Image 1 (cartoon, rainbow, N blue to C red):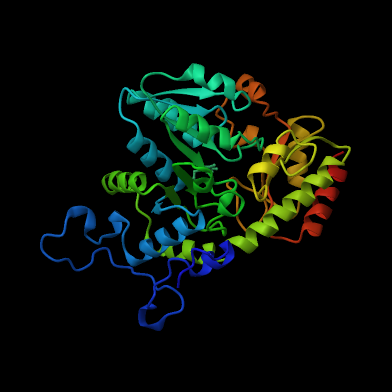
Image 2: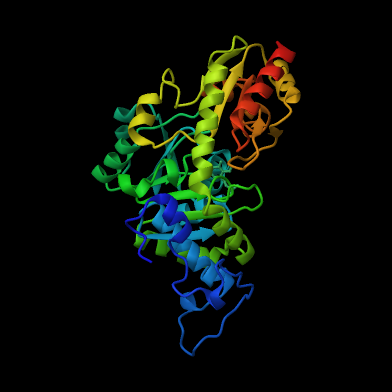
Length: 387
Ligand code: PLP
């Protein structure tokens, strides 16, 4: 079936699926075989072997993921971090330099500042609000620019079109971590990004039951990452491939619900007297609203807000909730809630958090697929209990 002219919801279900279903199976079977028959002389990278990420389960996923973002190629990896680390290690060698947005996922930030720095790969951070200053950070050895579609935990949006223009003007490879937006809300290749990375652990799988990642984009770059991954070994297990493929089929309907629920919650919180500030680009009063309207098809299910008071009030509020589960991660069917100062950003000093705008009373929510009215009622009762 030729799906390239079909809408995303159709591509999610049919793109990449075998032309001839195996044994007539409507659902892709799991190929739980580490190795496959080979003919003499098959080159190493073309042997079929789970670590080489090329079993039938991987191949279906690669075609489906590329189709979702209208990109030439895709590769699945053992985790989002495997996608990020393998990509950066492919693009950069000792002595190289790259630019990265100043607010990144903590694991990425640690990898850049500890591991890459240790290998002699330097990074300068750019202020997402001031594209006119990015040029000052360029060096003769600058090779790439790395950003995120929507940042954690303040839901900031960099001008993604400007990132691509800047990269093209200066001969840099542009890379975006598209985890928070998902391909339903943003498709980086359509805007000219060279590579898009995902923690498929989140929205793409959507059920909080696997860890997986993806690299999507230019054929030559994905192929280079694949070769590096074959050596580093961050391959996805076939059973996790099966679960990811199953999860992907419902991504469009899930994202629509996540987008809508987060908007309903953001509106409720923005009008509540116990809430100081809400960070959700879908809100007309949010400073990133114009960029979000121009660049994204939806603002995802992620939002954060600061309650009045401090750490105690925020912790008591989380404790008083009945529906959201207090756990890290995001993008699952169940709503999840955390206090970033105590979880994802606990590694930063209080001064660093203060400078980044991450207050002790900031609460981050991954809106799940529960009925939005039930979530609003639960948030209302918890706020009433504490304030
Ligand atoms: N990128 C973002 C934006 C994330 O939030 C995360 C994890 O929370 C990752 C990457 C890493 O993904 P994983 O946990 O699948 O390795």
